[in-house]
Length: 193
Image (cartoon, rainbow, N blue to C red):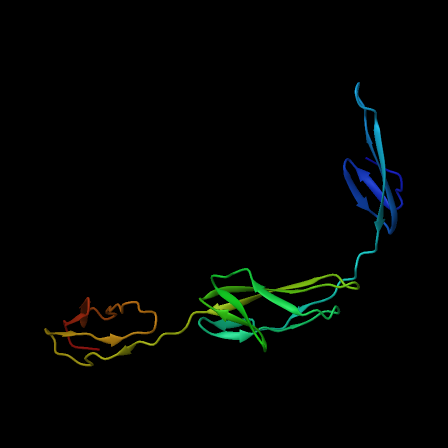
C-alpha cells in the first residue's frame, strides 16, 4: 500500500490514517510471479470532517431501594433523537418502557449502572452517558412476641415474627450473666435485665 496524498492521509503498513478532509489516494501494488503479471489498483477515499459531539446528561436518580422503581431522565443532546436506556448490571436492575417513558426497576441491593444512548444524525455524532445508582436493601422489621420477664432458674420460649426475607430469626443473649439462649429457648440464670 502506498499513500500518495500525505496532506490528507498517511500510510503505515496496511493502516491508513486520515489527517485532513479531502481525497485520500491509495495505491495498492501486488508483485507478479512467473505466471502472473504485477497488478496495481488506485483507490480514492473521500475523507469528511468528523461530526461535532453532542452532550447527553443523565439527570435521573442516584440512589434507590430494592424492589422499587424510578423514572429515568436525561437532558438530550442536539440531534433531537430519543434517549434509549439500558443497564450493564442486570442482576441489580433492569429498564422497562411504558407510554410515559423509561423506568429503572431495582431488583437487589448493589450498584445499578445505567447506560443512556442518543443516536446521532447528519449533523451530530452519537452520545452516551453512564450513571451509577446506589441501590439499598429493603429494611426489615422484627416484631418480638415472646416473654418480657422471667424467674431465675426457669426457661421460656422466645418468639418473634420476621421481615420479608424469609430467613429464620436467630436468638442470642447479650447478657449471659442474666440469661442464656439455645435455639429459641431462654434460660434465666440470674436476676437483672
